[in-house]
Length: 229
Image (cartoon, rainbow, N blue to C red; front, side, top):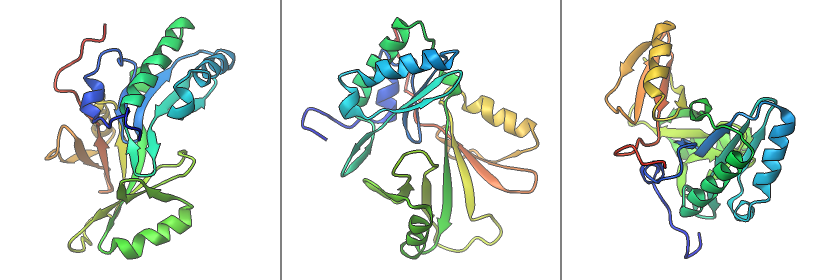
């Protein structure tokens, strides 16, 4: 992180004007652009790659037949998250999309994380690090991440006592802050149940019909809706 950059929180990102296309999830700021074809998507990806900020911002670009997902994470030796650089690059990418007539769909983004409950993290984490070929996440020793930022991150949650009555591994699904209630309702309608909303609106614990748990999480939301003009 340079002296001209500063770290920001998800609420700050969402409260900043000009970022209506983007949603902060568990893994950085994400946007999905509906290009409609691989050819248009390739032109969009090329234009993003040529942005001056792209060289230092290292955007993750996922090019598919109907659209392009872009994820922005500031990565340094001691930090892995959002920064003022993220804001600048997000605005530039949205401007590229507008110039090409490519619409954004903020409802289409999500990330998935695997959470493992542990009693002795120092003993457990090295196994998963070796098995997955992952590495430690900067500034967060409880996390392992894919060096290529493709696979789901693993988070190791400290437990004080064993919980044999509950599963020890669960999935966290990070969705846009304005889509969480819709996703929860859909999961419950599909046979699930709400286990706990004690930490809402940051996350909710759900379970399937056999008791296997999953969490729906959001990063944010802003204290108030920003002016996106």
